[in-house]
Image (cartoon, rainbow, N blue to C red; front, side, top):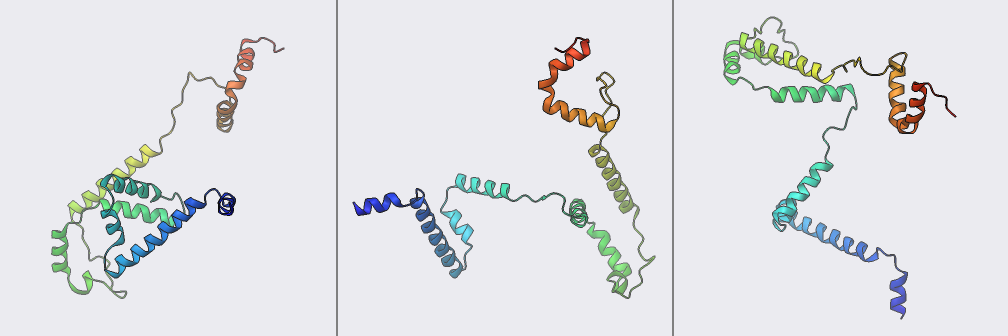
Length: 192
């Protein structure tokens, strides 16, 4: 009776909490054993799981990791753009080797005291690639910032752009409640 009374007074999630603590202790022990044997714990753990469970866990981890945290600063934005643009470039190793042989020495591997102005002459193919890339960036930018087209058939119930946006917001939130009033006003009948 005393034992039953003690179990009743325990929190409802006591058993689950106890199992979770045991699982965490076991995981720490397994992690330590794998480290002592020089093995990767994640790999050892995944060997014991079925492929579909491992795949679901990996998808869950990928969903948690959001590489794009949104706008933080202009420096971060510039770094992300630079990384994206340089990842898309394919280096021409042949021309790199030729340039290294021709220029050589301090001019190719400059230090802080090296004056390199006028020593590099890009090839026409490299300039064409640059022009093509810049035109692609401009095209993508134009597609991203497209202006909304003006609809001449839409009813004009605004006096300027700011009022137009305000009216759209009002209509979005309160439009269904004010439809009959709006219809009465447009038809010219009195509201009673």
